Length: 581
Image (tube, rainbow, N blue to C red):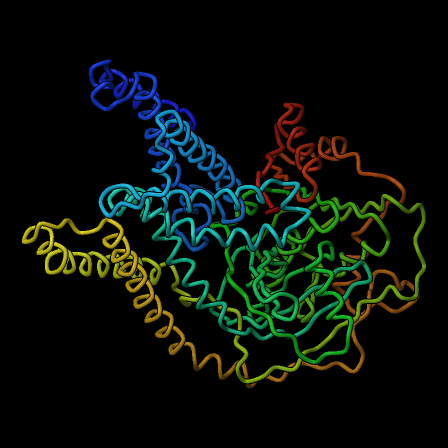
């Protein structure tokens, strides 16, 4: 539909403009007819690119209330940002190339060095295009996955791109993309304020499967649904890089804890694992988020089938913990759960240890209908390795550490609406005052016309000042209101067990630590040397209202979706949720 909109807009632009081009009009401009048409087409390509830019920044505005309205999370919307980015750069590249061809044909290549005070600033457009091309090249999957650091750092050129794009088109045309850019800048500043805090890291559980669970302190007023995500930065690993992780904890079951699971795969996670493997009593971590879906749709089903591959089990841990809370604490009826998980080795199987929180506040799982079918694909028999234990590291807090919380407090949506409204009103007032008492006298009382670039710069300054002032005031007010809770959290003593918890799954000769652990062990069936027959497993589900979720490699997700949509079973309802960025 969006591509249809672009094609219709471009064709309408061309038909309207070409009808006005005649041999006489082209001759008056010193051009041939094909040159005049190329000039018109180049301009319209830029206008269509500007239309795409109007939507480009909405998908990456994580705190925007617009995404939940259309059923999207910030994670799932990334693909739309990627598609729009490709279209934008294709249009802008064609826009610039057409003008270069036109100037070369008319021997006017010197136009590329012009920066007129009135009208279009060509040099500014070229600088914006060059910075955009640098970003674009590194976004292709092969380069992004192999050289993620290069992709990450070059993507910060969006600042240069937006700055020179504004100077190129002027504030009038920039207003078309202003809503998306304005929300993005506000979101980015709020995230900057949140990232300045060093959060309290309580503990880390190290699994022999190159997996780490980090447990943070969380303010009790911070709630989030399962499948939510956070971005974390570890300065000792990288001072600039932020990485998203799915939250594995339940804000209801663990009101003062937030957990994430990290699998060692790329260079960033490898460095983090090396740091955690060395003796340390503290690790500085910054957190942005949490960000999550607006509702928990999985609760509407009578039964759930959760299919995961490898570390894809992480989001399902959060779902299971949420259902544990609802069945044990609230006593409400919950869907029955079939967890089908595939692992490469026996050591990876220990990720099932993380189904229960580290706090150990679960005493009874009798009401939870859980069945786990675990498949070990690269081993044909259990591995008896004495090193298969979970090592737990407890960290020492410092007074400046803060619990994870929403940057605008518990009522973040109301505060966000207030900040957007007041900041934009402030921007309009500042712009009106500047126009009436500074720009207007120059335009009307002198022979000069106020520079378009200077006008754009002034508007940019007003946007930044308005956002910074109102957002900072809102964050400071919420920080002041939560100071009492912060003192209470800081006064809590962190538990320091004499012996680190070890794996309950691989030490059958050892007495099980608790009844919940024993319940999960009894509900688990392990298959060695085979892969799950997902089609058979899904079609054997006879519950009339069964929700199906898949997390892991793309091939696994597509296979599960194809079985659910094949029409062989009317009771299967596939939940299309993306867990990969």
